Amino acid sequence: MIKKIIASALDRLGLQVRRIRPSLAFDVSSIPEGELYRPLFSPWLAKGDFRPYYDLAAPKTLVSPDRCYVLYTLVRQALNISGDVWECGVYKGGTAAMIAALLSDTKSSKRLYLFDTFEGMPETDPEKDLHKKGDFLDTSLEAVTQYIGHDNLCVVRKGFIPDTFIGLESEKIALAHIDVDIYKSILDCLNFIWPRLSTGGFIVFDDYGFPSCPGARAAVDDFFRSEICIPLCLSTGQALVFKSKA
Image (tube, rainbow, N blue to C red; front, side, top):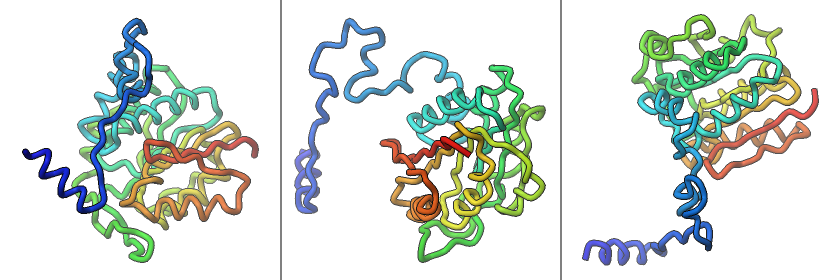
């Protein structure tokens, strides 16, 4: 009865509920961990190396398992690229804790630079952004650094971007995770990070495809119109750019 009521309400809105068909038409029972292939291939559900790292992130992040998996694989790829790892937009430190643990476990010499106000969002542009000043206020520098740990490899910069980039002009970057949600902050990140991104390096934008963050997509698109680079929009809602040459 409830299903019929919901279906009727959605129908009046021009929407339909459909059962997701299995992504593969053949039997996957003989494939190791074949359950990962139905209904959609979901490697982040596997019991491999990723799960312990995601378990670190999960209590302190809004980043979904599939997006964390993308970030995890990119950090692994970045281990062989010159430069450090940067995260702009730390919030409660979930993904930062995952990255720090991975760098530590692989005995990487890379540092993890973390940039955030730790006091919520700065001023936003109502013509470009849906978020407002003070969003994501429920965090603090002390709580985040305590949760992440790994003080030997983390460099935390509290304040507003791009002011927190001052003094880092000579740094090289292998991977940047940009999760700051709003137009100006993302554009400020790109103006500083892109020239310092190593050849072969990556930038992943967490909220490029999210309806709640129209400014994120606009900033990325506006910046790369003047660069020989096309952002790749992922099914997770993230976008990825790869620097093929200096």
